[in-house]
Image 1 (cartoon, rainbow, N blue to C red):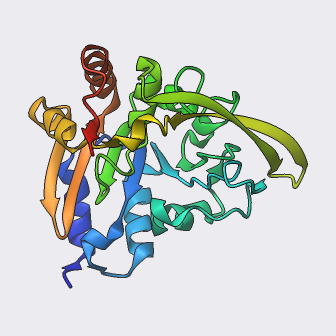
Image 2 (spheres, one colour):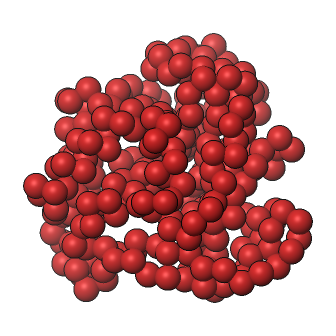
Length: 254
C-alpha cells in the first residue's frame, strides 16, 4: 500500500490553486491516498487549515432516508457509506452544520456554512442548494471519486436541461431537526426513468475527458486513482449546452 504524507497532501492541494476563500465542494474516496500519515484527522486538519477559515468546505452527507422510508434525523442519521468516510467525520465536528434535506443532505464548515441552508423542497435544479453553490462559483474537488459515480452536481445540470431519462418524483416522510422537533416534510428528487435504464446506464467518463480537454476540469493522477477540480461556472455552461444538443451524451447502451 502506498503512503501519503502530510506534505504530499498539502502539495496536492496547492497544485490545484483553489483560492482559500472559495466555496469548496469536496467529494472523497480516500482509499486512493493509501495510508495517510496521521490518518483521517490529518486530512481534515489540512483541509480546514487551508479552506475552512476564509472559505467554506461542503461535503455530501446523503442518507436517501425518505426513499428508504426512514426518518431523517439531522443529528443522528449516518451518511451513506457510498459518500466515503470523510463526510461523516466532518459532520460530527462541533463547528459543522448539516442541512435538512432528507435525501441529499450536505454538511459544511467555515465562514459561510449556512450557504447550504435548505429553504425549498427541490433537491436539484432551480431553487435547490446546488443552485446556491453554483451561483457562488463553488469549486468541486474530487479525490478518488469518478465522474459517473459520485459527482452529484451532474444531476443538477441534468435537471436544468430537463433530460429525457429522468423525471421529478416527490418523496414524503418525517424529519427530526436540530432542536429534536419531528415534523412531516417532502423532497423532490430527479430520479432515473427505470424504463429507459433497462437499455442504458449512466456513463460520464468520456464526457469528463471532454471537460479536461476544455480546461474546465484540472486532473492529477495519484496513488490508486485520480484527483480533479471543476470550476462550476464553466462546468454549468458547457455541460448544459452539450446536453441540449446531445441529451444522451451521458448514457451508454447496455
